[in-house]
Amino acid sequence: MIIVLRAGVTQKEVLEFSEWIESANNVKVNAWYGEHSTVLGLLGDTAAVDIESIVAQRMVESVKRVQEPYKKANRKFHPGDTVIDLGEGSVIGGGKLGIIAGPCSVENDQQITGIAQDVKASGAAFLRGGAFKPRTSPYAFQGLRAEGLELLRHARKKTGLPIVTEIMSPNHMVLFEDVDIIQVGARNMQNFELLKELGKVDKPILLKRGLANTIEELLMSAEYIMAAGNEQVILCERGIRSFETMTRNTLDISAVPLLKSISHLPVVVDPSHAAGISSLVEPLALAAVAAGADGLIIEVHNDPPHALSDGAQSLTPEQFRSLAARIAEIAPMFGKEVAHRT
Image (cartoon, rainbow, N blue to C red; front, side, top):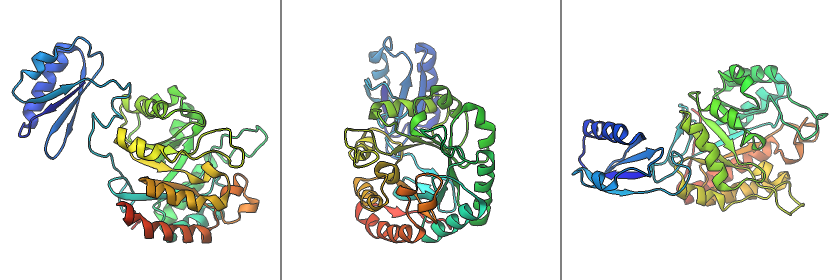
């Protein structure tokens, strides 16, 4: 349920009104303070809430029920866009287009640090790199794990770029205390115990859509994180599995404007995993910008033919530099400015 309050209501009045609603109806109230109005979102079982008694209050402008099962992720509860700002220019949302770039897997110190320096010089505001790698085959490279995280921290120290890397288990939480943005991969999108644990941390979570999951299921996974207390969630469209076999996945570009219309959470697109083919990364990335994405996550490797994972979809530093320049050129046409790390 959503309650829109009239303009001019003080925060003290909002607090007192919220406390009255919570005590009378056994629900939780979340307040969003906008420039011209205040919106209260009621979470819990609102079936027995007396709407007439609420409408009768002089400060109330309107009341309406929300049918969607996701509440905290719903734009109706939070009309303003959520912005993820890690400082010094590393921003996703609010008109800023944040580019996340780096290798699929961290392989060694020279590799990750060199790529970090290259992508920062080209315009990336965040560094990605896999330390723990979920692979289809148990015989494939699984990542350097804790050592990989240490190498990412070293690259961050050299470049200043915040690091983005994937977690696979709640048991690994202690290892990720110094990670700037924790990524939940497609295979773990519905690992609800992991999502609940990530709801207890005070740092952004990059949540990737599952290979065969609907948009509503993606938002419900975000809701798990937010319901546990962490509202810093970034949604990621990375392609879904379809009947097409010529690409690794099928990029659902329509998900971007749709998510932007129904949720306040920032949306980034992963054209690398969507295509699985490096030559398709640039057109898909540009399409994502045109569709309204708040960010891109792009795989870059200094030697793709010899990469330990996903070399076929990785751009070289030179290719990334060219793409980043094109993104910076077209972004203003769609109301965005590329975020730059200072």
